[in-house]
Length: 209
Image 1 (cartoon, rainbow, N blue to C red):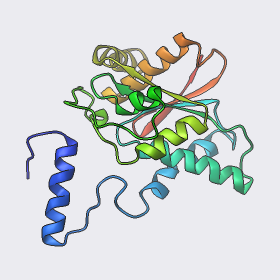
Image 2 (image 1 turned 180 degrees about the vertical axis):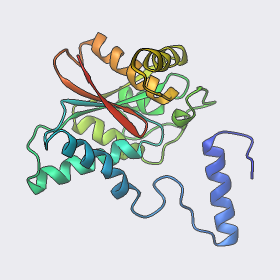
Image 3 (image 1 turned 90 degrees about the horizontal axis):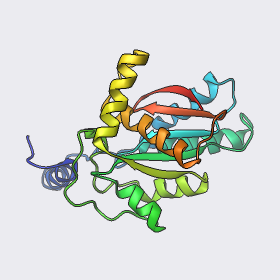
Image 4 (image 1 turned 45 degrees about the vertical axis):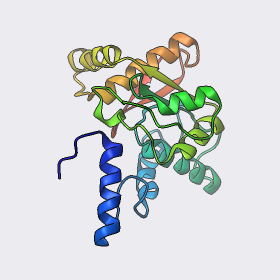
């Protein structure tokens, strides 16, 4: 079924269909074990860095399950003795055309207000009312991280730069991550010499300084 609208409209249509038909809703964070699966991002990152953790992680945030899953994985690894603290600072990056998490973080809110008329070329970031908003905001604050919004022009330029200069097939969401990291560095939040991991949606790379 093709829905005329955004992902939030699709979710409402899916839940209505599930209520009528008895189908199971397996959308983001509503199906069992989604966060346990997303922990793989954090587990593989720790293993590939020799059971150490980076200083910061910059994550393109739509539904935010990867961010939530990584934070849970790091706390599990710490409590199990696999890694030592401190844990990475977690940073969410969104498009300024749909930035409910950034808005809530800056306002000190514990949950997001649905974003009216979400607009961005980065479809993975076009999530006006993420279900995991409370978990995301808690992880950002507990890790002493933050949230930043970038323009579509910035994320497109960064995606193109990654493709042409580094040979990385970056999605618009990956471009947003790099644009967000640059903005964080300009603010002095992320500093040169730190180990900072940027996530290209599902694939990551290491960025120093």
